[in-house]
Length: 485
Ligand code: GLN
Image (cartoon, rainbow, N blue to C red; front, side, top):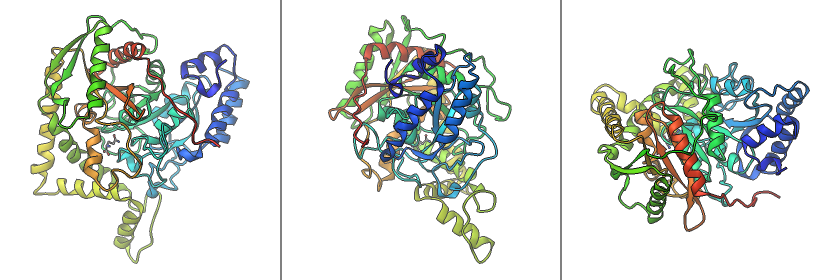
């Protein structure tokens, strides 16, 4: 049998079901490797002892009908976990222990998953490099001093380093797909309303979606099928017919029409990204699908629109952190001073920047000029996709405009950091599903991803396209365990 931590989720499930390995052995293996991997700084909170206890209990009375029978899984620290500290990567929630469980994580435990720990992320999921976390940078296992992407950077790093067989992240503007692309892993941002937002620390409520991250497309389908559910506790959850996605996988995508949007050929696009895209186009054709050029004319407005809508919603969502109800409180001479000190000491620089922008665009006098205008442009972006989907079944683009960059490289330039999400943000604004799969390497050997965007609720279709492409692309993640020992 292959070394435990090198196995995919699907292999582990099969091996546990066939009793070739126990949940305790699997859990121990991931804990041991996680303990040797502290240099990556992926964990904010470890749950190792509790995980081992759970695994032992599982082995005493194994329920092998479950989809994740006794599988240990570490999750992004944005999901509330009952009685386990949940920080959202922020000082302000440094000592917050939720009394309830997010629906998405509950779905995982209900299928036999075991919480291994809480993974580092950008503060309140605001960032593209995991550098805004109060708990420090995360290293990308691909190479030393390289960012893993963000905001689900700890999740991507832990997954690529084989500290967890799969993981979950959240994606408001690209936070699952961009780190997946930077670490040579698979990440799916589902249709808005597909995975419940209940118990996920809110960033921008009309954009936030949870989704699976995995080593391959099959594992992604399996985890997505576990976490996606209709939930009365989330008023934006949608009651549509969900599949057993992993059972309905097929590599047959013959005759599908795949759109390539001309507006995504952005100025100064690095040659390597263009070449990767061409490789993807060729691969699609080899799979028997047809490529059609399409136009998404409002693409260039997506980033400016996002950076009005997302901060506006964030400023409202983050108003609750006032030192009274949750977490950190700074002392002050009176109530106002206490609020001010708590929020200026408790929030990091990027979060404060978003709150400032958000309150500005929502303030009277500017609301119509900025927020309302952004909402209208958002609709136009959605209309572009609707038009395109009259002609095509899915859309193929690069996931990111570059490979992973060095830690510190973009720290003093927020706009250049924001530009990272140029290919992912439109998908969130339109509420559509998008999957990133590893598809190649740049000249330095760093991974690059391709994104397949689907129609709403058409996850099965983009998963199948990704599955078919994955086989042809034969991507190999070349990770040397430089951080161990
Ligand atoms: N990088 C984007 C931002 O900072 C997206 C983050 C996300 O998807 N959570 O807003």
